[in-house]
Length: 99
Length: 99
Image (cartoon, rainbow over all chains, first blue to last red; front, side):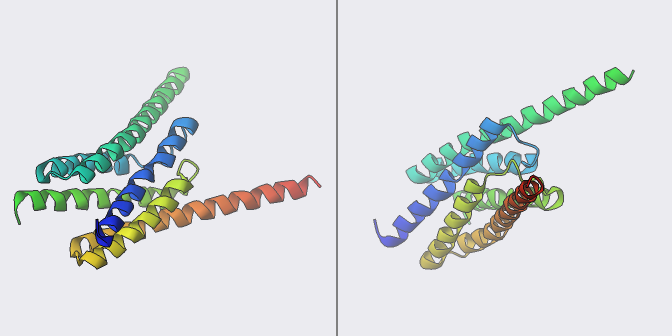
């Protein structure tokens, strides 16, 4: 592996691994209010395209990196949707109490 | 441009653009508590490596996509550090009041 490829491999590993602390924080704190639904919906969709791209060009590293990123990104997206639905539920309960 | 390259280009555009709503949300709400410092510190560093990689292999698309992502990611990182420092300041003020 030459230097360019090694650098690309390290860069891909770091930008993939970066999602681990965010996923961990979101799971443990359930503090999702500052997390953008738009980001994680768009990002998770984009990663699916990267996975298809990895399959089409037969690139193992692109495939593996993006499958890992997909799991992390989809987890944050799921927690955000759960957070939004819990708040909507909360608002409805509040509205019912005012009836 | 063949289909594979077009798909890769679309995937790169989407995963880059995904950071726009998060940056917008973080700027407008200043709700940074759920944002992971570890993610944005690691991610911003990884993007710098992607920029160097783009320069070394002479890839315009990789360079442009990662410069845009760098600006967005570094902005969120800056807001998160500012948030942490404001809270540390707040804690110190509280401690002083208890003296």
